[in-house]
Length: 438
View 1: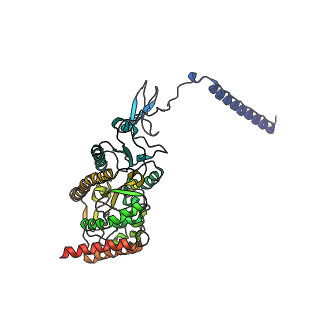
View 2: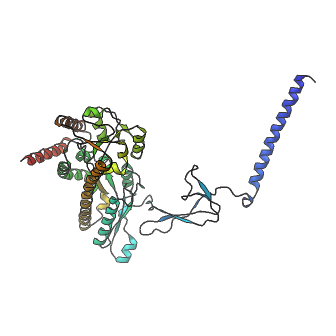
C-alpha cells in the first residue's frame, strides 16, 4: 500500500469519527430536554422569583422578593455580579423588603384625583400631591419636606397630602418635566439648571462673578423672583418656594491667582449647562463634561484637577481629597425651587393655596439658614482638617473676574435672559452697593 492510499484511509477514518461525535451530542441533548423537568439535576443557581407587591401602606409599598431552596447568594444578599463571593444556602425561605415607593401608573392624574377613602371617612375632599426629588431619603432636605407634609396635613384637616419619590427614582430634572406634563407627578424639586429648562430667565440669580457675597445675591434674587414666578405661571407652573444651595467657589489642585491660571487646569463642567459653558468660553478654557457621579473618579485618575462647588458639596462628594486650593472669589449662588403644575395647584381652594405656600415658606426659611450655616462649618473643616489653602487675588485680578462675569451676561442676553430682567437685576445690585457705601 503506497503512501497516498494510506493518507486517504486516514482522512476517511477521521471524518467518520467527527460524524459519530456530532450524532452522539445531538442524542444527549435531545435526551436531556425530553426528560421531565422534575427529573433533571438541580442547577447551581435558581432564578429569583419576585412576588407581587404587597398592599400599599402609608409610606409606600415594599417589593417582596422570596428566595428558593438551593439558591446561591452573595454574602450580602441577592446576586449582583459574578465576581463577588458566593455561598450555597440550603432550604431558605427569606423575605427581603426593598424600601421604595410604588411609581405612579400612566393615566394617574396626580393631585387631580381626590383621595376617595379619606373623603368617605371624614366627609371632606382631599388631594394627594405626588412629588419627585433627587436628594435621598434621610437627607436634611427630604426630612424638611416630610416635616412640611406632616404640618400641611394637620393644618388642612387632612385635605392636603404629599407623597414623595426621593433619591432620583423618577430620574432627574428633564425627566421631572416630562412626567409632570404626562400627569405622572404633580410637581418636583428642581435645581437652577432644571428651572432654566422651563424658563431660561430663572438662571439670572445664578450669574457668575457678579455678586461679591451672598447678601448681594439674596438682594437681587428678591427683586427678580416676582418676574420669574410670573414667567412660570405663563408656562402653567406654580413656584411654591425657593431653595438656597450655598455659594460656590473654584477648587483646584494647583493654585489659581489669575483668570489665566484657570486656563491651565482641566476643569469639570456639568453637561448641558449653557450658563457654565458660556463662563468657560469667556475664560478661554475648554472644560470637560462628565456626569456628576464620575467626578471623583476623574479627579483621582487625573482626568480633572479643578471643580466648582459649595464647601459642603465638596465634603459630601469627597472631592476635597484631590484638590488643595480655593479661589477666594465667589463664583455664584445656585438656587432651586419646589414646583407644581398649575392644573394641580388650582384645584385647591384659595385658603389651601395660601396655607401651602406659607407653610412651605416657613420650613424653607429654616432649611436655607441651615444650608448657609453648614457651608460655613464646612469651610472650617476644609481649612483645619484637610489643609485646603486660600488664594486671595488682588484688586486687579478681581476686576479681571468681574470682566468675565460681564462678558457672560452679554453672551446670554437674548439666550437665557432678556434685557428687562437683566436690567432689573443689575439696577438692584448697583443700588444695593450705593446704599452700603452711605
